[in-house]
Length: 329
Image (tube, rainbow, N blue to C red; front, side, top):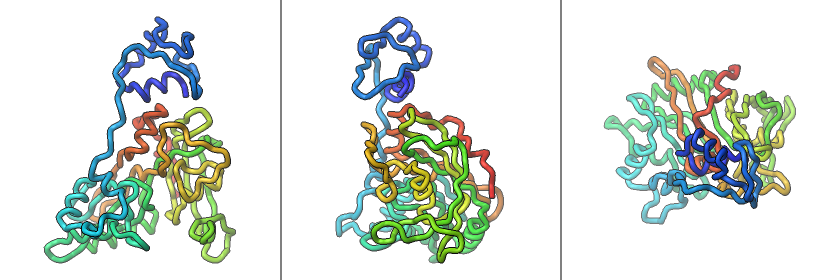
């Protein structure tokens, strides 16, 4: 990591001009020697820093942390209607009379399954209206993927939004941290995917065109920033919406997503110190026509474990995202 990025990660309140002054006057040293802002740091080196106040990453919201713990004690399974409604309100990014957009935390399943007792779909019962109508899921996210999740509050909204997703008129942008740096820095991944990988056949694998149950999967990507050649922050725009599409695509091209328990296969690769071994994949933004009029455009913040990684690596979430201009299909 460059020295200036190391400072940006550990001392974000330190102005760039002030850092340059500290470097010019020799108050910052690396292994006892003067250094420049572009000096590369390696594990084990010592950085001498004059008295400065570090700024630590923001801890996770207690409700979000609670939601990520599974399963709940028997007495809390299923939750209390009021408790579920309060929790959903705490993670709401946008709401009107037709739609609800949630910031789904990592570790919280979207739907029930074997051994899953707490999930978003079950919580939606707490938001049932006076007419008895229950909100409906419009799309899905993997359990360990954080970010934007769209819910329809009425039957008509659900039908309209489902049709929009099928027509690929919804624009989805994801952020991920991957091993290595893809070349070229912007590109398109196009494959056929089918189930059948993994010891129990639960993973997606590359398939041939025309193969039974094979689906075409297309993803655009762009490198936003990188930490040497070790890690890269990618912005991703999936055109299709296949199961595990992003996770499988980046494993296939040799740049698996950091913390992915299913698809990360890279020999002799070590997680850099300070980074949590959790899936670094965020459903960052969703842009979709509103079922009545206008456009829904919602962005989710980095989850706590990814924010910690961004801080440590010196990435700035406010940087220009080049995937915004990627073509549509």
